[in-house]
Structures are given as structure tokens and as C-alpha cells.
Length: 506
Image (cartoon, rainbow, N blue to C red; front, side, top):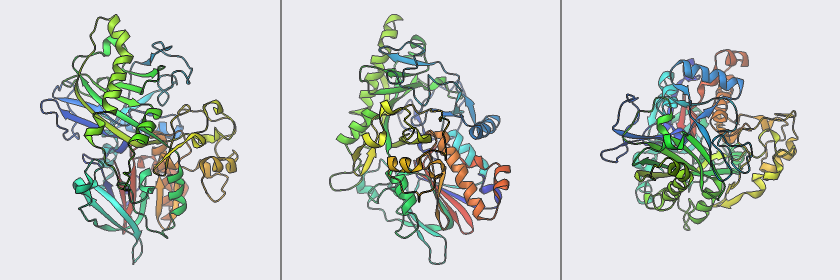
């Protein structure tokens, strides 16, 4: 939106089937038919025709001054609001408020242990990036996957891609492989923001960056970043349990549960009453890594393995629902409320849910949280991708020696990153590849991973882009480039000549 407001034509390519959102996606299900429907409209609070779920990002924080300023503008515009939920922990050794023992009861992006508000999009997380895009004047091309980024003969970048079912992650290979890509246009600049766009052509989100584009270093840095996979399950219940449980969202501790976090949709601002009480269940990283080891995203033949309902609804979905029932059973029994059944269930694999927080603010290099181990050294490799089965706290206050002041050489060794030896490289929010090619997102950042890092990385990329067009840093700061954020979703951006284009992947 910051770039579009400066007389530059911006095109957004969104890979999602229902519209922009990416990791901030939402699912609206017609309760009568069980079909997934459009979710652009904000429903009335009393509407009882749907099931509503944020099935990726559950909320966002605003811990830095920059993010607080951006969030204040979003709240004033009515796009976001504070989530005034009842947060706690359930499970062995945890009370309703929980303790600060992270190893026994890990927080979920600081909930419930860290102070400070958390926010959601009004009516669903997806509504925030869509509101930003609508206000920006950018052109949005939904359901389009960018499959190739290569230098154009006359300068700039030529993009090719596919649309419709062939662009989606859950489409069978027999359909997706039968569709040839087509030209999408030539652009002055390209901004990549989906971590999976750095992967080889076997992955359906790969951007197909041509050799010799100057992107090797940047793409390698993103590709080598240790990833945290997660599964989410969404369930509508036969009867409500929220009041008996006494919590709107909670983490689960002890007992080896696959469930990390559970959230009740109706407790979030702007979400309608719906046809049933709806919960989103997020797995632990350890559970997700084990599942990906058993069912990799790449088949033995090397082909991309799409998300299939036959798998998602036979293993991850039921496992997370059973874990929910086990976590709430004692409180339901005390309130004489029977265990609910699931009247609707689905699940999602997030292979690159977030980057491992290893080396964030130098936490490993300066010895902080070493008892929990370094994600880089403990990573499990599957199909050439490194995954972290364990996590230190995701909300982390940097020590006195912080960004740009830590031992950069040791940080580079931890992550296996060649950043040219810059002492400030570990602090970068975005990567400039040269020639008008940029990479942004929390996988490029050394901030705490998640929505805030992705938003501020987008702001940094916008600042870099405008600097290359001759605007000073003072101009960039004064004009509020932070609004370039894409709501924490994965994306790739490009500039059509003489414009800017952005490509978002769900």
C-alpha cells in the first residue's frame, strides 16, 4: 500500500483459492451443506448460518514501537481489534493462569505468559490483509501462482505462472501437471515473501528463480533457515464447551499431547455467533515434524505431494481433536458437561509455519536458552528441508548486546548463512538481491518470528524499493511505509513496468 500510494502501479498475485490471507487465512463453511464458501463479507454478529475459523495465524502482537504505530492505524480504521480473550493453560501441572515454566507449559507466541495485548483482524485474520490491499489501490489477481521469475530481454523481470486449480496446494498432480504456465507480465521489480518460493521446482510454491538472477545468496539464506512445521485442525462442536472450560484459548502441557494451542472462534472480535461453537487446534512442532517424516511433502519419485483430505482427516485432524477432548475432559466433567462430538472437521498442513527462532537477537550466540538447545543443531532434515521439533520461547526480549552488536560470525555459523560478512546482516528485515529483486517475510528477519516480523520485513522491503527510486530514508520514514505489511502472509512481489507487482502464496 505504501508503494501503490506513490504513483506506482502495483499488481498482487495471490495463490490462495479464496483470496489474500496466506498464513493469515480464514475458512467460512456453510453449516447446511458443509461446503467452504466466500469469506470476504463481514457477517452480522447474530448470523448463525456458518462455521468460522482462523485456521492459520491466530493473532498478532505489537511489541515493537514500529508495530504499535502500524497497529494503532489498523485499529483506528476498524480493520483490527484487541482480542480480549480468557487465556490460560490446561494439562498436567498447569492451572488456569499457568506458570512461567516454559519447558513444562510452552506459551504460544507469548500467550498466556507474556504481558501485552494481542490483536486479530475484525471478523477474521484474513480481513486485515484484504482491507490493506483494498485501501491501497493495488490490483489483486486471485488464484494465480508465479512459477517463474527471469530477467526480461528489455530489462525488468518476466513472470510466468498458472491459475485456477493448478495453482492450489491441494490439487492433484494429475490436474496441476497438465496445465502449462503462461506469461503474467514484465515488471520493474519483484518482491518475494513466501519462504517456499526459495525451494526447487518440485514444490508447488516455488518461484522458479532463473539461474544468474543475483538471487542465489538471498534464496540460499531463506532456503537454509530452519523451519517450524505445524498442523491445524478446525472443528465445529455438537454443543458448546467454552463456558465450562472457562477459557477462550489455551496451551496444553504435559503428557506428550500433540496439541499446542486451542482457540475459540466466537471469542474473537467481529466473528459471528455461527451455527456451532468453533475451535482451531494447532499442533506442536514435534508432532508436525514426526508427521512430515512419515508423510513427506515430496513423493519417492520427487513429485510434490499435495494435501489430501484422505490423509488430513484420517491422522492429523482426529489426533488433534482427541487431544482437545483429553485436555478439556476434567473441566467438563466438573461442570457435568458431556464431551462434544465434531459436527465438522478439517485440517491443514503448514510446512513452513514459521522460521525457527534460532539466532534471533543472538540468543544462541550469547548463551541464552541453551538448555532448550539450538534448533539448527537439532534440526531434522526431510526432502532437503530442515525442520525444528523443539522451540524456545517465541516472544523474547533481546539482551543488552542486541541487533547488530552480537558475534555475527557465530550467528552465521548457527544458521549456515553466507551474508557477505556484514556485522549487521543478522538484523536485516528484508533482503535486496539486486536488479530490483527483493525478498521479505519473517524468514528473512532476525526478529521474533511471526506476524510482526513479517509486517516489519514488508515495511523494510518497501523502504528499500523506494530508496532505489530516489526517495530518501527520511521521506520513506515520514510517509509511513509500515503499511506495506501483507498481514503476515507468504508472498512474492514484483513491479510491472513501470509498476510494482506483488505475488502472494497461500
